[in-house]
Image: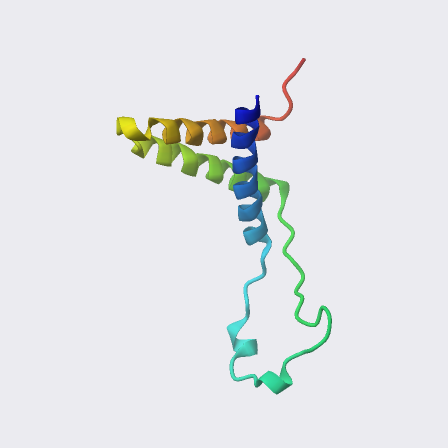
Length: 106
């Protein structure tokens, strides 16, 4: 069971990072270009920007893409020496796809 947890934790951490990246607001280069350091905002939270809110559909697409990337990478690992890594990638993809399916019926 513990090995299964490590696989799930790995998949979930990477997917949470992908979701966090998707919520990031792009930096407006025009607004920061040519601005002197002395003119920069100061103080706690002065440089904070509101994050984008992802729809449920966007979150599902990102999770599905993360699972797809793992399955694609596993398919490319055909050498016997990489069988363990390929199996782990497939297991991570399975964890993510199960999240999209929702809770299993009892």
